[in-house]
Length: 243
Image (cartoon, rainbow, N blue to C red; front, side, top):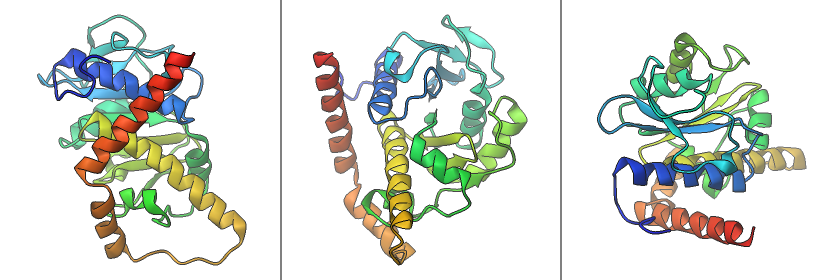
């Protein structure tokens, strides 16, 4: 836990946070065997640090990353390069504001993405996505293993914080490890809530977009995001200390 909450942007410290983000996502139900991965933009412009393959989200530690350039060449580290590295590389190429990219197969969001409905801000956590929505990539149900497909996903993602990958999973992004992790968690919670609401048969209205955008700014300012991130880290510490 030493240095966990310090604003230290050295690569080793950030990768420790990215590793914890993997384990937090597993804790929140997003694990799928050894599938799923997060990446961190190298601060020196060399490319991105990607979780090595053949590890479950709950197994990732700070040393479990490889540095690849945007063409997929491994520059540092040892271990298998995930087949879906182009998903990360092409989103980062297209979005200079994004420093962390995540990909997982959360159950409810994947179910939601198999349908054609729009994910709407019908509860508090859904307003995280109110400004840009959550687009759906449906050009293929296959995994994203080529730069061409990666560029297609990045184009559909646009300025949004997340994208549904039809019949596959999701991808989510953030300026920081904290923001990307919260986007992944809130996406799954939002899909679960909307599926339950639709399944209830109750009639419902979708809140006004402008109101939802303002609500997001009101309930998810930086201080609240810091609080949520620390909460999930405490929850992870309790889980891992009791194991």
